[in-house]
Image 1: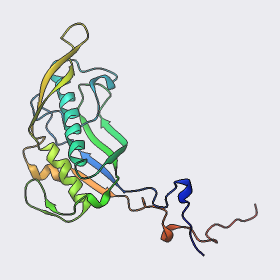
Image 2: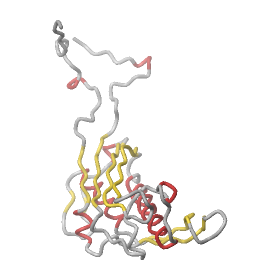
Image 3: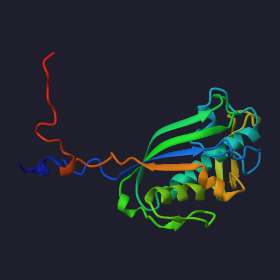
Image 4: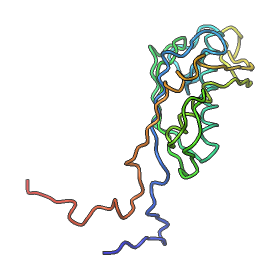
Length: 211
């Protein structure tokens, strides 16, 4: 038995490429005060909610969550192209004044060999030994960062258009850096692998029975 790769059809056996990881960020303990520390981390815009934020202060929390999500994705793409999939957000309700409590998503790294397995957590207490831990550390860095960026922010008090260009600043989502790390769970999906010889089914792998 032999496998002949159909190169003329531009079809590779090494599909799907890369490596897949699931991420869970439990955010119930993160700060939700109307300060630079509030807003948590979320991909949602103000107009994604059934009821928009009712004040500028609450809308800024939504923008801070979105800014942290952007910072997180920036950090995750430094070493390799990464695809984001299967985003699930958990809120108490679909009103914009409610904070996110949990965020789940999937990351697919195109060049997984470029993702390191060494480093330390943001509090310096634990050495990193796996790719999943390195990804967790990059997410933690984004949630622990101080950063300012101009954003288009929904402003219910601004008048026509309800959009203001505002410099938005984010700070640490929690004062205890170790607890930020503990809130993040990254798990490799080990079944996400190319269709190489060791995973190709044998000739008798599928049998039929009369019905």
